[in-house]
Length: 219
Image (cartoon, rainbow, N blue to C red; front, side, top):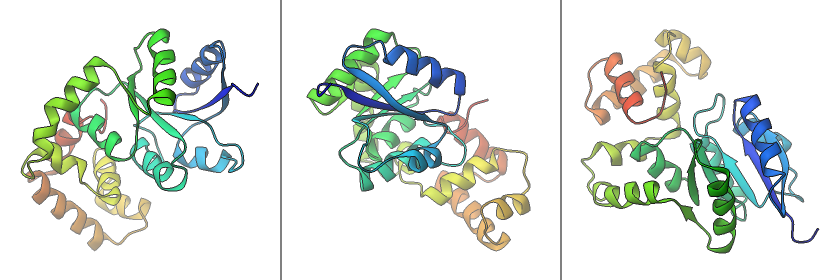
């Protein structure tokens, strides 16, 4: 039992994470410690004396998304290896997860053998990136060095700006967004105007299109 490595799955789709847990429990020397619906649920269930070796982390989740959760783990439990698990293959999503501490990135349509290899390599090497993700990272390095690129801008949005941007993609009014974020309407207007300037857009539709292009929300 001392060789057993423990996995935690954080994904807001219940059937997916339960099915994935059953699959992982078939891998030799790997066992799912627990699963959670989002970052807040993960933190609530986490036992400091028995943390997982690997955290399989979705990106787009309600309440506390993958970016915020990965950063929390990086600060509070750096011993946990975070593997992003997502349908998103947008450059910005990949880079932002890595910036927030992810040690690897696996797409949800990957074969079980690739997932097992990702576990093995992130534990033995400290990281795992398949050919697709590695290529995107290399293509993005020069862009990240250029402060004028949209990729760099997305990677450097604050948590509050990301939260507002996701809510701006809903049908909620700015007043309703302010109430949900426990902020004043003036503060929300400030976030909106700051994003207009940062993202070089002038309307709410522009914000939505930017979020879709960069994999922050899905239609």
